[in-house]
Length: 258
Image (cartoon, helix red, strand yellow):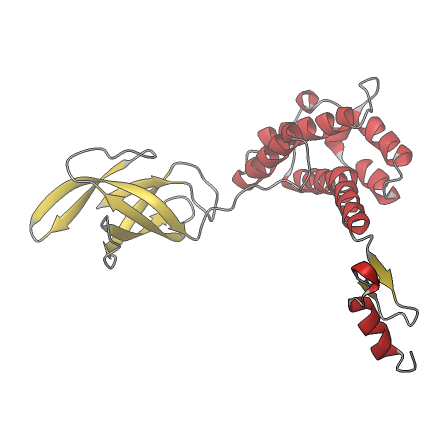
């Protein structure tokens, strides 16, 4: 029986053993031979399909490899598989758009730790993401994180619901390292949800509004028709030397009496 190591897309366990139940060779892919394997996670017992390539007798370049045994007839052939795809694919931890890089990295780590059940690491990463956000927004460090975020909500005109939500997030009341007990799954979900919405309101939405304003400025050659039928390109005037241009033809069609 063969085993491999993988990052399970179901339970999010990292480097967990998975039993390979069966596999086979995929149709000819050109330069290299590719295989598929059905593997069952030893932690959650859910299956995944691994797409891999192999290299008999040597370690190919690339990501970490796992030794396997493939039986052809009666002769076991040792080789190494190089996983290149997985079905279902692991879920990437994505931060909201338009965040500073140091805030985005902390938030992505918080989401990743939450999915894997690493509650202490997740709570600290959430705290770091919000602390960096508060400082980036000019909140200083002279009060608790919760008080500084509440002040930012008022000063920047963010939705008042964020202020109420912040009062419910336990980790905002002190440093993440001060907690006597591990956070519960419910309190962690509450904190992560608040962090995501706060970052969206404080960074993502203002950036989107500014980008939309830039687009509107670039559309300065557009005008609205009196009938309210929406914007149309400005009509060109006569061409060089007094000759008729496209604008004259348009006006004549719209007003036959001209």
